[in-house]
Length: 604
Image (cartoon, rainbow, N blue to C red; front, side, top):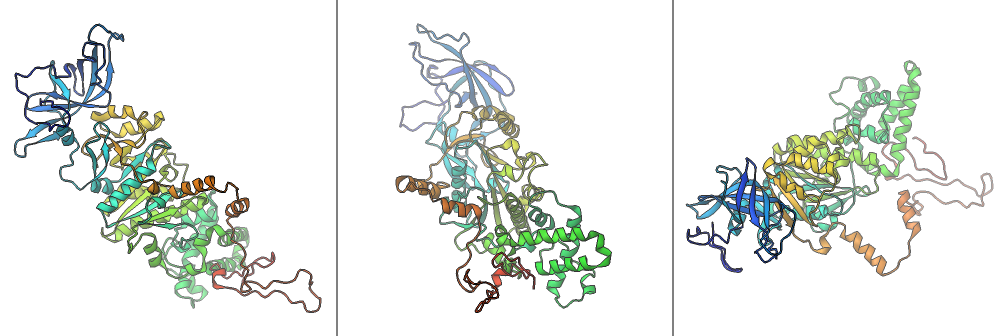
């Protein structure tokens, strides 16, 4: 027991003198079992005015001589449910035992242990916990720590997390919409990058909001700036693109599995004959080796012309139409541009994963407005590459893959989502820490997230959750000795979170630091909206429709096509057809010439 001094005075850690009166105590233990205890106390000082010493969510200490048992108040009740104004009001305070504090004679400081060696006896005195004991509870014992906010119980005490353990063993941030998840993640990223300069971060950002919170550290990548060659896709990822998220036809997938390795062999040896092409080759459809769509389509044409494939020609024709439709689709320019035919894997990986990072170690892959089949395939490729890079770099490359709206990629229902994406992210969750590849999960619906992935996150920041199913998922992940802490999940304030797991010393209720307004996620879009409200309120419908169509405007220069007067007709004097000059970037990687006045693309 310690002496309670006036505010502003240093708190002595010496034991209370036996002669000091006990009226400074808050209450006494009247019931105790293996995990909980009940304290008998008074809610007022006898004048009918509540003193406010007992509140739900506070930590208290129980004096046991050489040790002080720490308990969390999770319920307060008055037995008769009647308030008396002429006498003191007796109350029962329910506490959960979470550990004990003892003094270290060598260092002269208190030490906290999660276990309970000596349980409180009946009549033991309960006090408000001392500031130094409170600091000892959340002390990280010399681990590499960062400060992310302050304790909710005492804002003068910093809330620290062990950043190495948080990253190496994965983490999750969960909470309902609008509680500040993105702001908390932006704060964690800024602190983590300052503590770990060697860290590279890939953010799968479906709302295009994180780049504004990391203006000096992040590089934006979207479909207009992304270069991700189609030959980097595995067969199942390419199939997702070709079939637009629908179930793939088994016959067409088998043809791709057979012909893609042949096309890769043609790229490596263009002079090979037809029989050489069909010979055995160690490459498979999943080998990341370049090939040309022109060669693949040529192989399909050759097969259609063979007599023995007469009955299979509809399958070949359907596959050919799918490939041509995908290649000419403007949404897939980042995959099928002709400049991506060459072996550019070094430049692609270096730019996406920031090797070297050149002062910007964060990549924000912005996916707002992208078709779901594109998002599925690209996220699968990026997650797979992240793991492979960490694996083959032998731990020298430290990567963090951060998944916003993670329940979209890794749903609990196996029938939903894209299986390769789920498998790639699950592989990082299960094996990534061995090779330096970490996973960060952000979701507002932990109940819809794959429980296998969530169970691999050793540190969880649980913000306000209103859904009972989501709360049950979090309760199943927390230690029994801290289960009562989660009773506050539905009533926590903005920026508040309950942190538990390997990254903290014990379960901690904290409030995150405030970020500067200009660094809030999505601040750029909000500023633009505020500017529009303050200024011109007119809506540019033409611009909105142009973005909706996502089709580039036809170039006006004569290098693409020469305009012809609509008054001239074929057969008239001085009439000449338009001259089309093909550019390399209009080749789409397989020999199609650009369309002119509605004429279908023709093959060379």
